[in-house]
Amino acid sequence: MKHPEKWYIVATKENFNELNAWREEKSSTPSKYSGFRVGNPLLSKHINDNSYYYGNSIDRLKLDSDYDDYQEITLEQFRQITNSKPVSETTAIQISRNLLNEYYEAATTPQKEYLSEHFKLSGWTTIGAIRGLYDVACNDWKTKIKANHPNCFEPESKEFDFGDYVAKNSKCILKAHAGEELGLGYDFIEVRVDRCSDYYHKGFYLNSKYNWELITDNENQKVLVPTKK
Image 1 (cartoon, rainbow, N blue to C red):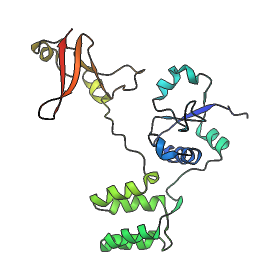
Image 2 (image 1 turned 180 degrees about the vertical axis):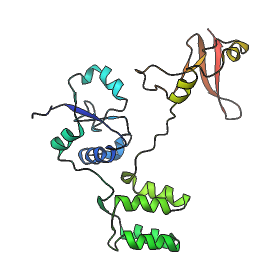
Image 3 (image 1 turned 45 degrees about the vertical axis):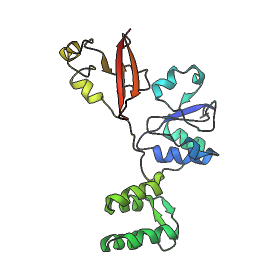
Image 4 (image 1 turned 90 degrees about the vertical axis):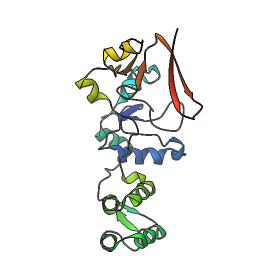
């Protein structure tokens, strides 16, 4: 079967680590393009840079005429094209002896027993063992472990998802009377529900009937100010 020269595959929680491992290997400056997240399409090649991914949603990609000739592929096709291997809990990795000693010195007795069982003195261990260490670590060390081994964990999105709220209520944030009592329309602020938007179910839409300005006040607080047009 002939594979497309230009292709994309959407990153999911299940395939993210495998896709990102290939992307980091291909990119000569992976840290510069560290924004790859679940939901982003991985690309055979970005048309403008060395990131190997599209920084918006799949819906947005399909509307981008620059990528009209890119074809979606399956995970199996991706592995055939790139010779990639699945990243699993048992995938072996090696950490530095200094880092292993740092973990051991800070560990409690049960945590030291875990390290002795799952980590070799040479630093060889598995992705599953790193995740297990995270589970038994205290809160301060959880943050450090994730920072030290980002490829062992799924990326956490800092964005909110307002989809459940919209489904149970409506796209309007406040009840109709609240907007009217403020002297504004009932729909002056809404959840973004347009699927073509990069901020679908993630951001707020400010009604274009008003002027909006985000300013910092005299107490160094952010304030959103509407004015009449």
